[in-house]
Image 1 (spheres, rainbow, N blue to C red):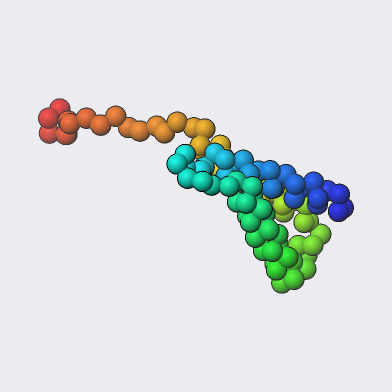
Image 2: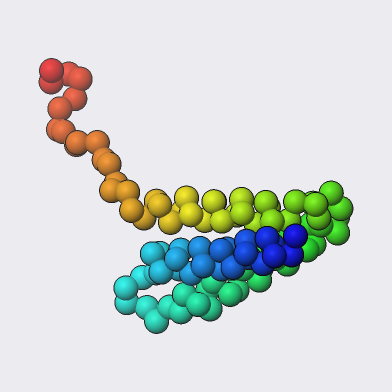
Length: 96
């Protein structure tokens, strides 16, 4: 089970690194490795705290981490989609 958990945590770190890369501002000196480490450690602390409050969470730790990977991957995909905006016209309903 620890092997699955280690793999899930590694995937989470890589996903946070990817999110840091796609969301960073081009003009800033932003370190995606530091962001990934801080975010992963923060999520693991959250999991640790919640597993103390809810002991049944300990049975599903790899799947909880994999769920977070799916969430962050969805956030990364937002940056790939073009923004679709409605065409602005000067017409009102009275001018039709």
